[in-house]
Length: 189
Image: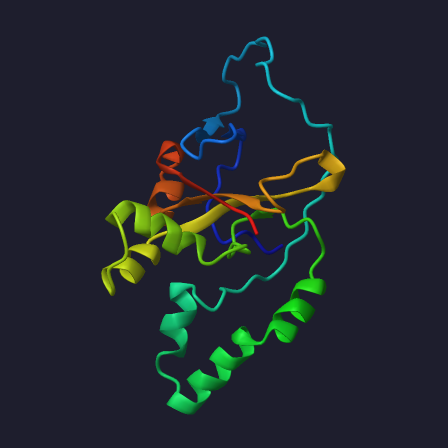
């Protein structure tokens, strides 16, 4: 059996929290198996209907503005780089590719499917206090996708205008199970 590209805990539960509209009100909490827990009253917030989910292992790829792809194509000839850029600038191509994907797109690990551009670059910009090349892409390469929760009609979840919620972490923090180090990004169209 093939495994995820990130080392999640083998036992226990990861809980993902987000409170609209503040992106600073998001967290990941790890609850190891056997941890004593207790029920609490639900907060005053709308409850989403339960939706059964099933997992399927799929390959993902970085978007055009993701640092991993920029690094991979840096060795290509100028003509090949321009060809790749033309593909990603072509609205018809992007629309057709998007229509081939099932909606909603909830992911664990892999590359995020950003709505507006590289999620890792968004986190790097916040960490660096703005845009500065090449430090921006160096910082963005230090982050990887942990979880993506898409807008989902079946669950009555709409993040902005058909957006997604993203939690990203540094691989070393995932491996060490330091989930409090997760960064959060929300994007919408």
